[in-house]
Structure formats: structure tokens, C-alpha cells
Amino acid sequence: MTTINTLGLPCPLPVIHAKKALREATVGQVVTVLVDNDIAVQNLEKMAKTQGHQVATTPQGANFEVAITVGHPVAVPSQEGGLVVAISRGTLGSGDEKLGRNLLKAFIFSLTELEPWPEYLLFFNGGAFLTCQGSDSLKDLQDLADRGIIIGTCGACLDYYGLRDQLKVGAVTNMMAIVSAMGQAKRLINV
Image 1 (cartoon, rainbow, N blue to C red):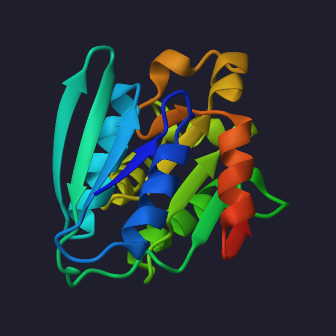
Image 2 (spheres, rainbow, N blue to C red):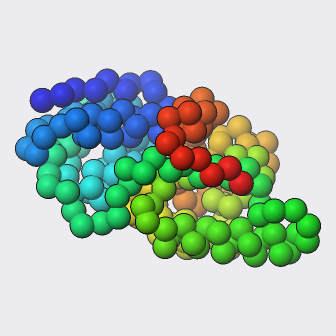
């Protein structure tokens, strides 16, 4: 059994550490991740299930122990491509703003058809609006989240724009977690 202590680490770092340990584990091995918030539990459970692992979560006082039993790989597109998509605005390209919004909506939809799927979608600055109430991309983003793709929106950006209570998909993250995910990416798309 492998135990990973991610107490105090912001999302998505618990998932990053868990994925690394799971890649090195064998079928039947248990990887236990210690976390201190519900969002990390939810993200770990989604990731584990989409990769064909069994997962059991046990409260430990104010913390949680997420035990992931390594299963046989499932026949889903691999998320091992290490693709991170960072979106910092509400349009794709420059020029006509309406066209740019439509292009970005089509871009996000296209991510649902991409194989392998991205590991992370990161939203900051003007991109924060895309994960919030009123966004035309919520259905596609929720589809991606349901597949276990980690979606994080910058908390400072949500606060700046007064959107924190309007977040509808993914989790609140911070710049350190965004930089860490981008820094560990094998491939990066920056919009």
C-alpha cells in the first residue's frame, strides 16, 4: 500500500500526485490519498472511476482518506497524453468579438471529441466566465468533468469579477496549482 499525504495542498495537486502513484502501481495495489476538502475527494473519485479503479473514501476527523484500488485499464481514451488546456479569455483569436466567442464555444466542444482527452482545463482572467452561470459552454464542460477531466478556475479571478457564487462546473483553484499543472504538462494549449 502506498500513502500520499496531500493535506493542505490546493486542487489539482492531490490528483496530480495520485495519478503519478497510480501509473507506478500494479493491479490490486492500494494507493491511499489523504486530503482535507470535499472538492479533492470528488476529483479523486472521478479520476479513479474513469480509469477503471475502485475507490473508497473514509472521513478522518476533518480530513478524508481516499483509498484507490488499482484495477485493469478500461477501454476509454487515454488521459496519459499530458495535455493541459489553459483558457484566459472569453474569445478565440482576435478580430470580431462575436465570432471569437463562437469559435471558443466550438473549440471547447471539440475538446469533448479529442482523443486522448486533456488532463486539465484551467480557466483564469476572462476565461473564468466560461465555467460560471450563463456560459454557453457549461454543457460541454460538464461532459468533460464527468469523464474525470480536472477543471479548475482561478479563485482570485472569480473574486475579482464577483463570480465565486456563480461557478457551475469544476473547482476553485489558485495560481500555484495552475502553474504546477502547466509546468508538468507534456503538451500545453494556451488560449
